[in-house]
Image 1 (tube, rainbow, N blue to C red):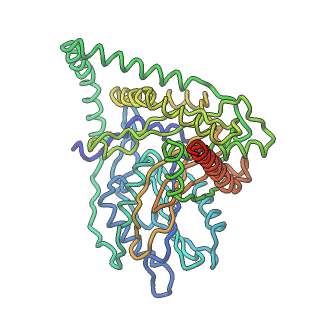
Image 2: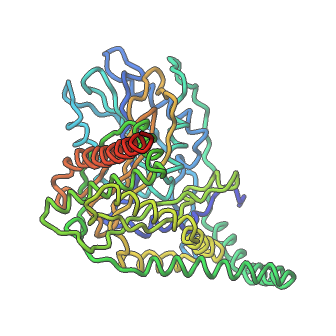
Image 3: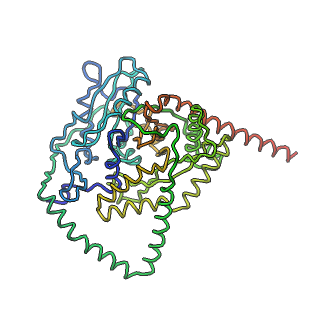
Length: 483
């Protein structure tokens, strides 16, 4: 069997399969709203067959989207194989809102779609094209399993489907032939790999012995990085009203803030865009907890912040290459400027630490051993510890207009999966001068998720007003001294 007829999932990709159960769906999502219809049929509605042809042509750049999961015969390691029964009709779907559909109805539809697990017997993605939005707009709801894509990879998906200029002509399709996968040849390959494993280990050991100084320094750096990672992950956190066992249902919300305002504020406060985002989220969470009459005073509210670890072209074909920071969000802090200062201090400390590198090294070790057991044990251990309350991602998106054929992309809101005991998550992506906050939650645990968008805006305005007030006082003090 040719090696190119199947590919192994990385340890990190495999972990998202291990995390999944009936209540924790491990797909990421995105809701894209377009200013018009990308292409219309004779009836005036969306021409879904034309759209399917366009998506199919763009899959040349995304070969993983025509592959399904399979498992090796001996160790049960997950691999990608071409799906001989691949059908665009199954993956590219058509829906309509009662005209004129508003954002509330679109959010309800998106929540319903994101509440359903993907079928593991087929390629793990769906695209829903939704017509009927007020103003003649169209929406696209994307749903892709996390084992196929992370935040940065999601931008790559957009790049493949959308264009920087409008086009009325869909790309022509190209015939696709699936590569056959034979179970007997898979067995032979696996036996050969297992037999060669001791020799690969001996060769690596010999290379290390041949350069003792470099090896000892590398071992020391690795030990520090791994220890910092383990120490951070072992801090078990107490539950809040937002952190309880979750169910299978999802609700979604979104909110946008002007990117120029965010950049001006981060410059004024001498921080980063990510510092502003985390501070705003901390302020919104504080409001949510206080609404539930839960006092956050003295409480360590921990957020996982994914860190992109891609280093070059060798990572282009990797679905997930992320590490994580554990950031204590100062939700008990009443003063927004002190809240920002504490966030900035925490992120600066993490940038100087080796926590992100340690997580990446542990994942690479699991890849090197090829052990599915390590992945399964690690995911079960993390699920039982619950070392965080919230996941907050922040991915920079394109700042030029993008088009789906003739329809201009108006807004974009990413969506994350929910892990056990995690009532909601926040995904942030910028596009065309806006910072889009995508919010997803368990509606049984957080029935008022719709209030989180206004809470984000209030938290941002509170921080901006405090910064303006401080700047005004400093300017007045400077004028007084000059007189």
